[in-house]
Amino acid sequence: EQKSEHAVPLYTTALSIYERTIGPDHPEVAKDLVNLGNALCDQEQHAEAIPLYLRALAIDQAARGDEHPDVAMDLSNLGIVYRAQGRRDEARALLQRAHSIMLASLGADDPKTHAIARSLA
Image 1 (spheres, rainbow, N blue to C red):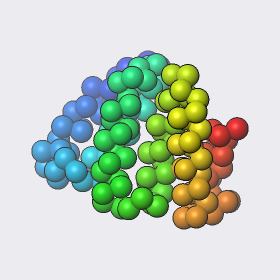
Image 2: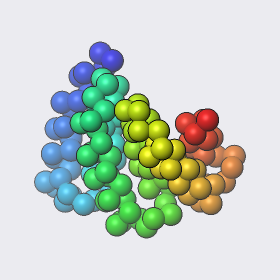
Image 3: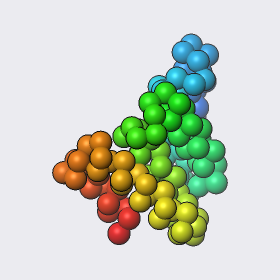
Image 4: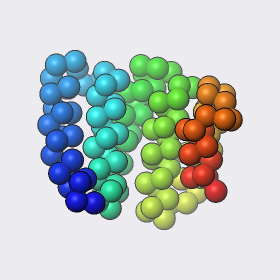
């Protein structure tokens, strides 16, 4: 948790730089949004992470399409944070969708597919 405390301002700065230099809708911005969201979740700041994950999802869907592994990871992140908030039905639906995308795109043996399957269990 201490590391994530230091990570939040660093990710916030990196996000700001990326948004100015490569544009707010670039997939690299989505990665920084996810990193910042993850750091916030590490600090139990789930509500603050949700809009970041939603924005990353929108960027990745627009840039990569709905069936891309990055979209699946965004859906998984949202599912995990919703589960942490007690929103189990929403979480399960997102995690199932993420798992389906990963199975189709990377296969059953991929570590990311396994990670999402564990989140579903």
